[in-house]
Image (cartoon, rainbow, N blue to C red):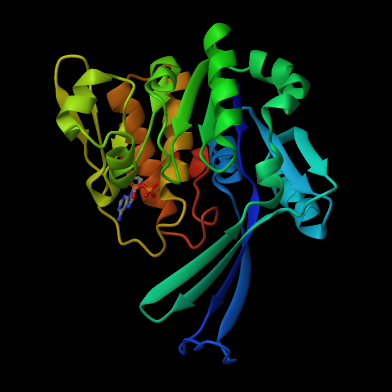
Length: 292
Ligand code: ADP
């Protein structure tokens, strides 16, 4: 069983050909909403791949929160440990897509209310997990408390450190897996070369390389697991699908190299669909691929 402790949000996306100047109002072309938040995305991706997944986190008592929870339920995610907080709104991201450019404002809202003090309420959920997955969209001190707790209790942990935020070495040591992309890796390890850090954390540190795939050190040598060649339509959520698929495969006993190949395949399918969750494959869809 996987437990994801992390963010849930709604993306509000508008497209416009004209960028408004300060104080100006313009007409844009399109508006849409999508479910997001790295935590929720990873929970949905893992559930579609057939594992038991529980989500831990918080949404507001607003309609957006109701919709977010309903979407998780629809995707088979256990929401028993999703709290509805009264004093703040559900997390949201406000995305403006210009012709060759975009801008995003994130309002963490309830995601910032996932505090270490709340942990007593979901400790039994953590204890019942084979793997706990974390990202960087809830407060750092909560991630640290969970990493400590899981380490003390022999529960495996995976931190997908997105968006980039530095993390003390003590916590890297306690993690089972750390999965930055190249940019996040450079922020976490500013003074070391990529090869140095990979060798320092064999089979723990997996760096994703976008269309190049992923790289890790197997204890003897560095190994790149190449991505699948596809025509991407929307790479939002590629990393989320990758992390969930890697976790699923490792729990099923696959070797790291095999798990990363599985993760590359799931992510390659996901980038061919729109929205973070739109393209996320089910296990059936994975099995239809000739590369499976
Ligand atoms: P993030 O989305 O977190 O920035 P990456 O860009 O490294 O992370 O992508 C994560 C994974 O998604 C890659 O390791 C790869 O498996 C897959 N992926 C991303 N972009 C592509 C692409 N253009 N073609 C095929 N696979 C891709």
